[in-house]
Length: 67
Image (cartoon, rainbow, N blue to C red; front, side, top):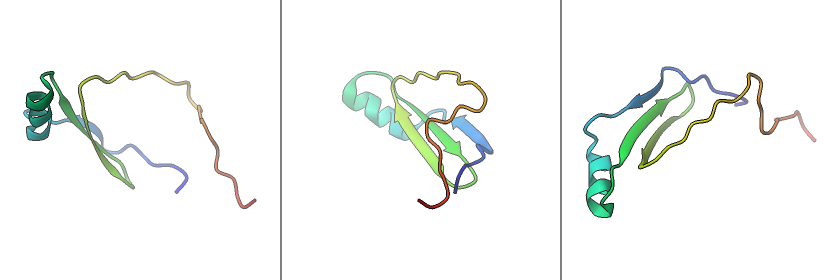
């Protein structure tokens, strides 16, 4: 797969049991976000997240045919 549509996209899970368990263990706030795409579903448990805007067309790497 060369790309994935971020659909339906990211959703913050309010009152996350997993995030609360980490917060209780570590002593700082944690959050849970679920990111649903057409090929994968990701779940992030984190205490701090920084998002940076990227220009349209940005690609840190490129997949090419064969070698």
